[in-house]
Image 1 (cartoon, rainbow, N blue to C red):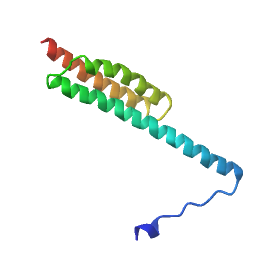
Image 2: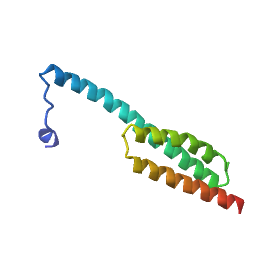
Image 3: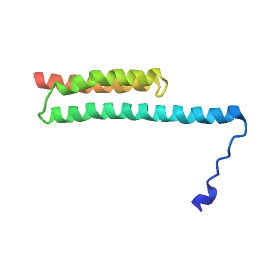
Length: 106
């Protein structure tokens, strides 16, 4: 039944519509790649934080976070994520890094 309810995509007749479809596919691929890069850098910082909390290198999360900040900002500037979402991610990661360095100093 699931295949019957799925609507078949119609081909566009107008040249401008066909061009729009080509552009949409290209833009969608670029946005997907940037979204994936965003998730990867955030995940890398979180993994480094977990390792540092378990007794690993305390400086690694900070260096990864510096790179992650530029990736997060570029994704927000391109409009893939809202600027507030980007700020929220950066803020939370920075707070975790600050807490880790405070616990290491104490």
